[in-house]
Image 1 (cartoon, rainbow, N blue to C red):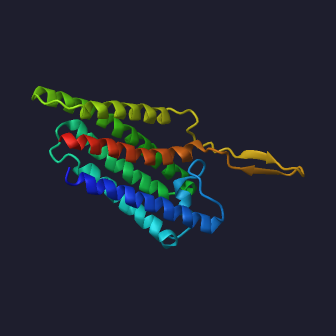
Image 2: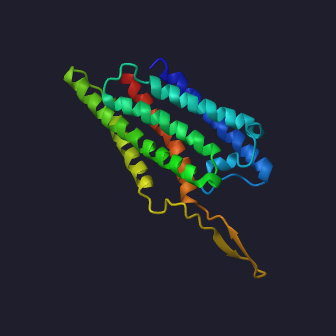
Image 3: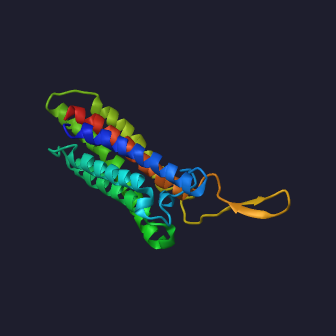
Length: 224
């Protein structure tokens, strides 16, 4: 608990700085606003040097370090084995997102492999929190203690597991990135991005879900 609060707050602070600085950099470079619905995280740095988006990239690295520290220290006693899975899946999911930001689709095989691992560990994270909080609740009951927090976390993390599973099983989650055909008034045809690119949007959703999982774990630490 003594480490959870500062690391939780730091991930929020640096994560916000990463988004703001990176979106501003993108708009200044391309003169259009960045959209998480149809743009990949790697596009924030596509064909750019690290220094071009220095503040955004540095904040991202600090965010990932914050996540890694949080997941590594939220339960120093490891009350049950499921929390060890939480530690591993949380740290790895964070690292895989970091890699996705710097590996463009030019290296489509590598990007695809990293995304698959990111998706798997993003699913294991709420799953382990769900089962771990339930097991921990049973442990508290066995020693005569009673608090609703583990069951609340269990219910919310169960919903998170269902949401992540739905993303994992989404039939539109493919690399078939079809552009939208638009016919202008003069008869010319151009191709633009659809309003939502499922793969790109999913990468961002999984990143934001890291924060929700972190919040649920932080709430659970109040009963450790």
